[in-house]
Image (cartoon, rainbow, N blue to C red; front, side, top):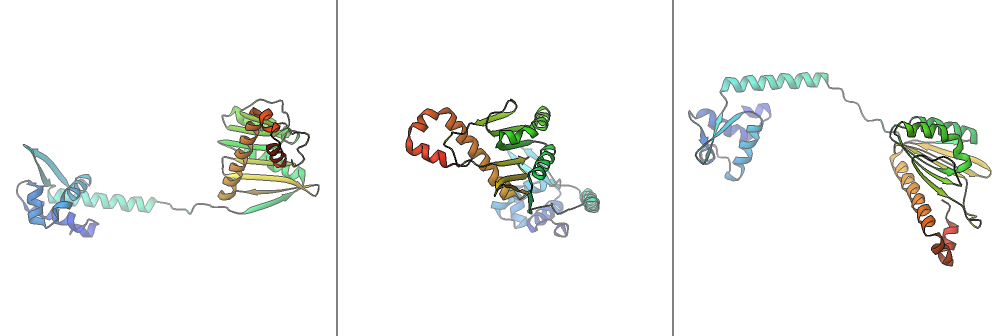
Length: 252
């Protein structure tokens, strides 16, 4: 009968044997009368104890098992069923909102406005990369977020006066002609704004697509690592003509 309440065949067999017995039984006796394999009986007994259907005790070194009285078991199963029905009635399931759309945006001022809006929504972290003169407009809100205990990490191409969070400064070499105007903003590792100059006009994308956010987060830290390595070992790296030529080709 217990199988109708979601119990396994082995659990039902063990319960039937213990209910039929007037005294507690050990595992060997339960195996003999229930036809539950010896290799499975302890696993079944422990499950039923966890479910609150069996009592256990020791007599010397022997562990004994006893079933709850049948009326008590019925009351317990009834109470569990009613609780499950109540939980089912009150449960609300909603499909998670997954927005993989990629939005495009043009115009420098529109991108700047969107950048401020995105940064203002950050709750946990902000990663920002771009040219120092383009990041200046974001400084007040970045400082505010930093004061609110939001992690702020900035990679600036060019000097910046502000000191907050983790600041990384890349000073372009005069021969570094591969550098391009760009801006990357990632908030909470959930939303991305990437913008750059093409044919003299700013173009950008805004998305919550997880693969793209992860890619640009890795891209951000790739640039941070290159910046810090170059800064620390600048003389050694730039004296090597082959390495210098590679560094000069990096767009950051």
